[in-house]
Image (cartoon, rainbow, N blue to C red; front, side, top):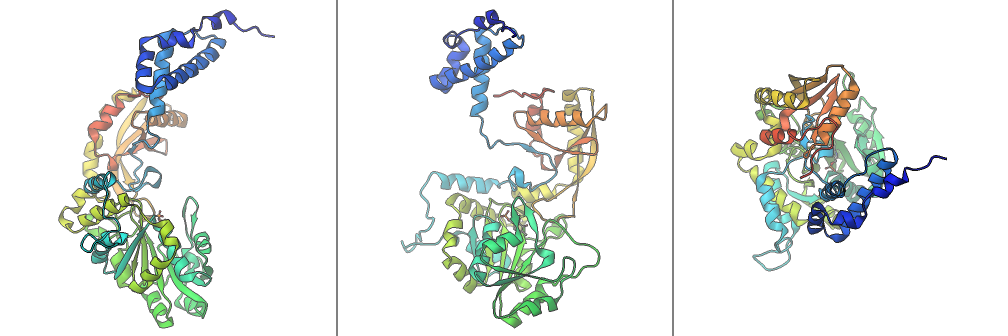
Length: 472
Ligand SMILES: *Cc1c(COP(=O)(O)O)cnc(C)c1O
């Protein structure tokens, strides 16, 4: 039996003694007696374990300092801001679109006040939530009517449930995609109550495939923008326009899920073409669904736009109530959509577009300014090189088209992957975590999404190789 060094353990101060130190008083003042006492107990617990393995007995002031760090760490928001240097502009795990300043102000104003959410100020009668955004979304897309729900997954679910509950929804095998997480088209269609009718093959679907599948039980034809992958080679797809002609001839609605969708032609900003909502409407879709927080650049939301009579049915579906959006998001959406009314200033005011449109040459200049800053912080174990790289739009838009960008490529002199993993962890431990990506023996920090260069530099000053960044 090993005997514990009980003499040392007995030297550990009591909770009461730690509470008497000035730092503990500060902790009590800021966090309250109960929380401070608990934090001191936790600090003592850890010190006791450390002493058992031979560590020195800490002073009461050390324990109080430890408790204060614990309290500050616990107080930090869980939803923390980070530097997104992944190179993916619309990163789903990092919250997708950044909200425009105008939308932030609108949300802020709506937050603490009563607002005319479902109230017609002119008549004094009940209004509709959709009134705040209907015209703003119909105008640039040419749609007759529009509604907004929680996200695009909800938009798809609601449309399918409304128009194909207990009926057949016809979709090409080449479009039965998984978006990520647990969003798989076939599952969502089944959950919506539709009977899935798959037509064609993975790589080729023809008009005759749809034609032979349509019958008396058909509720709708469903076309999905295969956001996150593309089939190359021996392929055939029935275009939205052709499919619309088939749908009209057979008297069934065509639903087009665009996923990201965009309201404007992105090629004018030097970006690859992404189908616009207006094009999908012009090609003859009866309803189009798309996200609010992808290329549109607003808060999380899902739009359903198109035929008025079909939207009336959608709005009568009791599920609509469970999927609706709140006043904050409507405020942000209204303000975001209003930015589109002034195309000349859109790129400057809409963060998503601003970031996507940043010329690689500007980003490279930024990388040259930051390389020495980072090198000084990391020390000469690491090489920091300015490097060309490619950014992704993300969230399924333009899956294979990347945008030229620049960044910092950090490599360890040993070429060790472990050292890079440790560095990535240390960067994540900064007061504002820095998130990059590891690629071929280097940690790449793509600077496309870095606007506040000074803030990154200040943040790096807290760098410590072992992690454990300072807590303010
Ligand atoms: C992203 C996407 C969805 C889901 O949209 P959310 O707004 O994330 O719910 C649905 N369909 C397609 C094609 C998508 O790209």
